[in-house]
Length: 424
Image 1 (cartoon, rainbow, N blue to C red):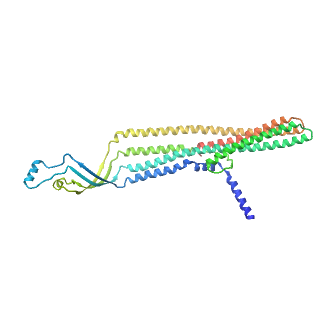
Image 2: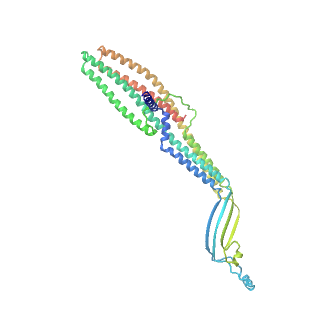
Image 3: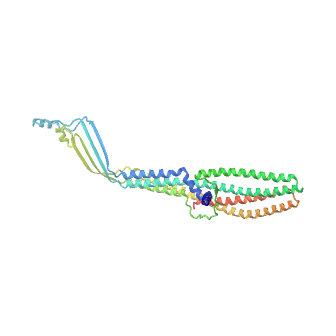
């Protein structure tokens, strides 16, 4: 029995520990659960296929062919020579107008001017650029999680303050009921305090409903059942270095353009390859023999082929200028992003500093409002003031505490907004 109770307590504690999740855990779960994460696997597969195709360009290329043709004229001897051979008793049949050929050809790349190497680097650079672009979309998920997370924390603080308010109102209701029983309070005094208590209970229902909606959205985003959150620490953020995925994406695009530049220059290089061709047909390569013998023969040719295409020179300068222009555009986009990013950093830093100043004032205001409320409760006990006056001070104190808690959560939100802006 003791063992069963121990196991049960362990399970309960483990559930409670798991229920207390951090912002970083929610961000990680959300990215793992987001459908776009499957895009990385597709990008890797595409890159592997492209690399495989590039490496296979060095495999010998074999092709089979069969042709039939009819020629209106064929190679032959002059008539005078035919007459001479006929007088010698040699009859030359000549080539047929119908010609047949069935064979195979084999080519082997020896040097392609670096084209296959550039093709491999292009495939890798394209995969890296696509993955970096996917990182940008995945990173945006963090901002959505931040908004949900701090929205829930704000509602949690409102619920705690609402509970404190209800306890305070209940105590005053009990106090007024005792006064009513002793004939020192009027029924409407109790009614006013109970009405305020009911309003506080209504407000709690509204807050809980809103929190449930936020929790449901956060659970869907993360793929985990979440009940309560850990309040993050007011950690310092290093703004000296910006590590946003947008900048990495721009760098990968620049690298891809650099590879494209290499590809344009490589297209001017010559091509060297070996070839071999064999066929069975009529006529064969020995046309003279085919003129005397009308039969099919085996034939073979082979050698080295050098090909140098100069047509790429016509557009070489224009293509390189286009790449240079695209690189300049990336530079402008990078500068624009950093400019706007610095503006956001400055805005958040000012907001954080301003929120800290507000919190200092909030603490003093709450202390003063609590002191005033305590004084009014003492006056009520002595019959000096009306219940309505006390309710007003209770409302003022409650609003001051709500404002302080809202500012505290807003400070945390601004800190983590700054962390999101710099990704540090």
